[in-house]
Amino acid sequence: MDIILIFKTIIMGIVEGATEFLPVSSTGHLIIAGDILEFLTKEKRDVFEIVIQLGAILAVVWQYRQKFTQVAVSLNASKSQQFVLNLFIAFLPLAILGLAFHSQIKALLFNPKSVAIALVVGGLIILWIEKKKIANIRIHNVDDMDWKLALKVGFAQAIALIPGTSRAGSTIIGGMLFGLSRPVATEFSFFLAVPVMFAATAYDLYKSRDLLAANDLMIFFIGFVTAFIAALIVIKVLIRFVQNHDFTIFAWYRIVFGTIVLFYYW
Figure 1 (cartoon, rainbow, N blue to C red):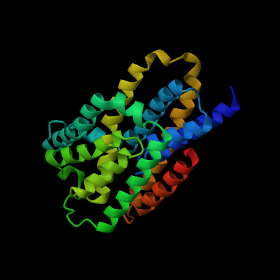
Figure 2: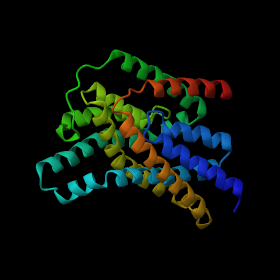
Figure 3: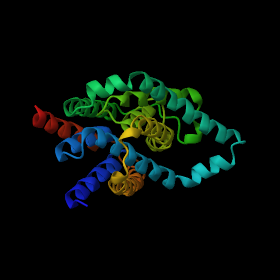
Figure 4: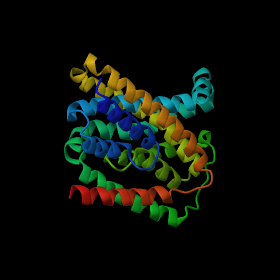
């Protein structure tokens, strides 16, 4: 197997795992990294990115396996039912809008320039929100959320249909604006990623099934495992980080990186 291709595959896996749950946009970074590395063909790269996203989401399932197991074995309890209902309701806006506009968004906005603009704009928004110092925090446990709050967070998440916006960033910042503490907003973002990304992966894999080939299995496997490991590390670090830090550093990273990308492609 081509050692250069393996090296590029590992980089792509690390990029996915490292950025999926940070407020910096994994999709945006994958578009830019894939373009710079000239990784696979555009069609094959799209399928590859779908597969490694599944590796990243399985890291969440592993990290929170006790919570998911507890909910699964106690579905007759009201707290577990509310948790599942909240995830379902928060999932709906992205699912409905994604099905309606996915093709148009992919055709118009899945390019490095659009991603760079979204990165900069998103960074400025995060800076503004962090400077604003949100004072209406009232939810300090994910189990205290009701369906109306989950729906609001779901609409915030739907903004991430724009590549470069960041699903994690939209969900976390939106959750904080609607009254969730930073750790709870981050945790709910992890949980919400599971149904969202499983559904997106299944949908995209079905649409791209004709592009799947046996000789690509090793590359996909390497990317999948790399993304899983990188995501697991980032999740553990981020859980500790949000206890005592805000997202200003991510905002500046978005602005600087987005500006560099704009200059590079313009």
